[in-house]
Length: 144
Image (tube, rainbow, N blue to C red; front, side, top):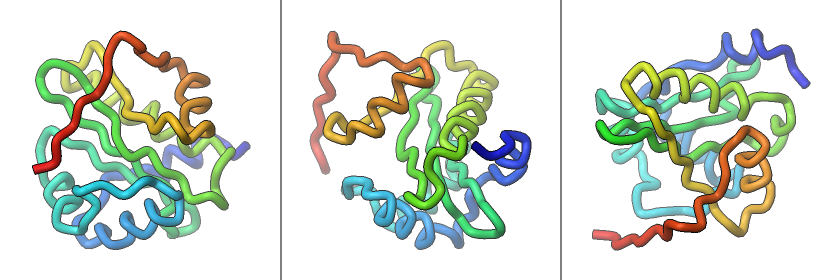
């Protein structure tokens, strides 16, 4: 596992011009595509004052991302993605810790993470960092 202090030094706010690189990262990390997976929506999220779009770099290469938002009620985490070559180095944990700090500063007292059920590596990770599935709630979605 990499030195967490080195990982934290490479975590930063994503820049609008990196939207295409983030999309490519998500593709390489095998994230399931959604209707907001386009450069314009990523740039909009980056510019939102309530959204934290963070990336992690290793030797100048973008290797991971996470999005955290606070809607005034609770924090939400989306799109934690780590390039397969950089997994199991503590990068995802460092990103989650940083996004939790930012959401707490915004006032979040509860944070939820959207996790794909059929990605066992993802559900296992989230449970390992202290997030439990909430079987009382089902997510209902309508794309507009």
